[in-house]
View 1 (cartoon, helix red, strand yellow):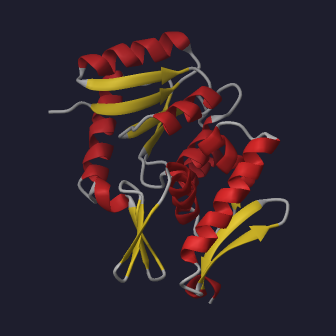
View 2 (tube, helix red, strand yellow):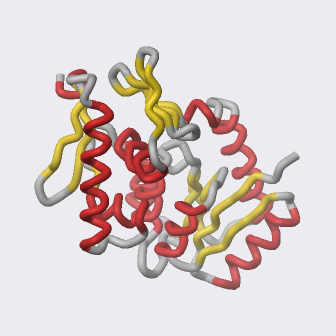
Length: 233
């Protein structure tokens, strides 16, 4: 059976290494990142079944990291690790979409049981293929195949068109922040990449224009929003 892959974001290298070794022995494949920025870039480049995220990390804290991870894939399960015990922190974690929450120090066997429970809840609920298929107006957008289909027409998208449309779909009727999209897809929010993204937004609008109920609108100074008539209502 293929090993489940876990992203572990923990700035305490001793604890992180110990957790990685323990979970490897328990038949999980674990990638360890020691700050929030590295963890997010690793998440973009790799496919994970579950994320374990420490809250207090340099460069990008765990709440911010989890929020950005959920913007890319709202269905990825997240377990928070923290030394904090404040009720407000627990509530904020679950508000972001945490599946579980453990306070340090903790028992590794208990963490393993919680990982197994979360994976049972999430893996059986929906097919991976289904999570990557979106209905947008008259279109069916298949992320894996990078296709937009309507009636008997099939539009083949480029990788960046597909990546950008996936972010828009995951944030439908919400603002997709410009810098977030640039850092996620281009890994740099410089001027030239920003101009490139504008070109891809124009291409996506052209693909979608056959359905007048769909719009990708500019939100001045912030980013873009994918809306349909149903969203507006």
